[in-house]
Amino acid sequence: MGSSGSAKEGKFDHGRSGIRRIIYTAIYSRDGFVAAFRSEAAFRQLLVLHGALVLVACVLDVNAIERAILLAVCLISLLVELLNSAIEAVVDRISLEIHPLSKRAKDMGSAAQTIALLMVAAVWGLVLFG
Image (tube, rainbow, N blue to C red; front, side, top):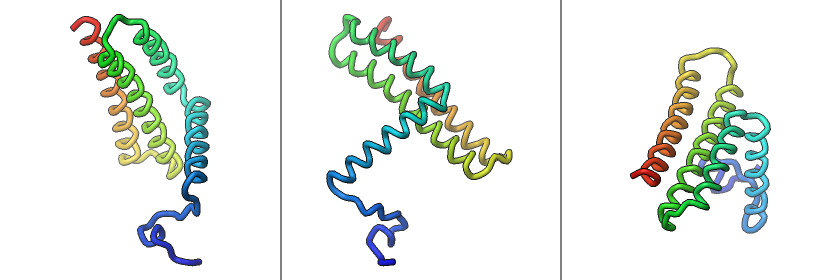
């Protein structure tokens, strides 16, 4: 097997570049979104919540910057939930054994989502009532 720059850096050489890499990245992203939707109840619940908030943000009488911030915090919360789910999947893949480091990783992911949701509440509260 030949050596490449990526292999020397400890990265897997996928052998794709240019438009082909972009297409495969889009496919992997779609697969991740579908997996989260199918297997993560919390992700589905957040999609419903943030979907409703996005609709409300689109009809609110706010300026463009406020609307952008309202939409951005909703997307950030979904992003954090995807990362939290990914952390949980990796931890479970390594071992289902109860371990303090596994618990710590999962708890930190959950804490990140809690902070994201508090940010959503704070931003929406400030824009609507601030």
